[in-house]
Image 1 (cartoon, rainbow over the protein chains, first blue to last red):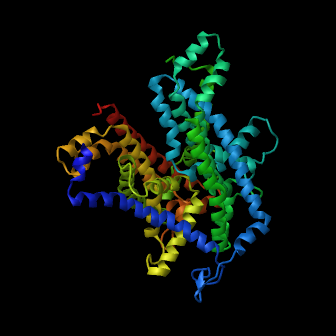
Image 2 (spheres, each protein chain N blue to C red; image 1 turned 30 degrees about the horizontal axis):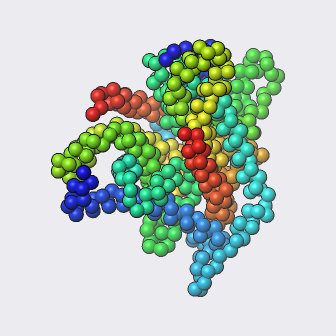
Image 3 (cartoon, helix red, strand yellow; image 1 turned 135 degrees about the vertical axis):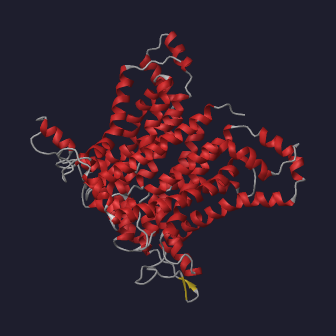
Amino acid sequence: MSGVLRAARPRGDRWARALVVGLPYAWLLLFFLAPAIIVLKISLAEQTLGVPPYTSLFAAGRLQATADNYLFLVSDSLYASAYLNALRFAAGATCCCLLIGYPLAYGIVRAPLRWRNALLLLVILPFWTSFLIRVYAWIGLLKGNGFINNLLLGAGLIDQPLTLLNNEFAVYVGLVYSYLPYMVLPLYAALEKLDPTLLEAASDLGCRPMQAFWRITLPLSLPGIIAGSLLVFIPMCGEFIIPELLGGSDTLMIGKVLWDEFFTNRDWPVAAAVALVMLVALVLPMGLLRRYLVREAT
Amino acid sequence: MRHRLSPFLATMLVLGFAFLYGPIASVVIYSFNASRLVTVWAGFSTRWYGELLENDQIKGAALTSFEIAFLAATGALILGTLAGYVLARYRRFPGRTLFGALVSGPLVMPEVITGLSLLLLFVALEQAIGWPQGRGIVTIVIAHVTMGLVYVAVVVEARLSAFDRSLEEAALDLGARPWKVFAVITLPLIAPALIAGWLLAFTLSLDDLVISSFTTGPSATTLPMVIFSSVRLGVSPQINALATILLVVVAVAVVIAGRILARTRSSPMP
């Protein structure tokens, strides 16, 4: 009925509606979709000296596209290994996040009601504090004469400082630490919805707690596990700050490669090609997988 | 529900929170360390805070960062509220699928790609139409608005979907104009989400290093850029002091916002 009435509304309201849709739409088209198309365009150009440092795609009235940048990415094993490294680190760190985050989220769900909001806020709070500073904190803890080494040396557990910084270990620690809150929140949301009478029924029927966990809690929290894992996996793959500050020469990740191509080598076309490959080989498939899995699980 | 916390879960809670807060605590503690060596304790001192206040580079960068964050959060709030409203209320219009994809896109996009692609857009625009002239605060704000608006949209959409729209429809049927319905009924109802969204966009902007580094020019240096270049050279007690100040500011803001949200949530909803 209201639809009928609204159809007869003055013309000004339709304009208002067009404006409400149009403003954010136009903004996102211009500053999110158009840039992606420009990345594609520049990845097909050549590097030159000048401003801007790439050749025009249409010169002298014809298309001058080149696949050289992509061939270069394939020919140099650095790029493939940086891409595989990123996938490996992100996959490992996602598993660690899950192993730490799941009991944490489950503990919060099981905690007394009056504590629950406070505990949840405590999980969210680090997410609000500076990412850079949280990564920086680990430098002080992990370095040769850092807190952890001093502690272990003081306790007489080791004789000389361990190498904890600028290696794979430090990158894993940084990734897990930085992305843990993102993992806990969807897990908490899934576990909170779980009907406790199911577990009571299982227990009444003689099911042991461990068995009940594997057969009831875990399968029912699967949407949360999937949502949390994919939420952390994609940004982890593109991470720049963590491999830059905590990693070493053997922990190259694709996000850092893109940064270096752009800022150090000033090769914009190759940087654009790296970005496009990441987009096609990482963001799009993971986005589609996420849609598919979330639909399957719910 | 049986609120039984098994010993295993209780231990995991303690360990989990120790893991989350230990490193942050270490930064705060060593900011009060008298020694320049960040890892050796040499007595309590506020010396680094004093030096920080005299560091003009950091003060200037902080001012730039707060200016950018304020503008970006406000822009993101306006556009994000519209986007969230569209997602929650306009079920069908031409191009809705694309709109949904555009709103969720920046959420999953790695920052290096967002930063690079926006920079390339700005360069191409400057070539084509002469705007923006050079890069600096304006281009960073545009980038941060784009990043922040999708977060605001998600928060606003969630809030709008949480209450039923019969109130809005009643007002519409009684002859109120849509913009009036929005101002008088919808806006007060989603106010907590707007506060949360603005704060979220503000802190995201304040914290951003990667996208700012791509989209900035010689005229604008933000706080994370100064921290980053300093951290690359090693740990410095001044950075610890700065980190502590930022932590306190953010913690206070989040707790206040949490209070506001909790109060409005417990009040009877229409």
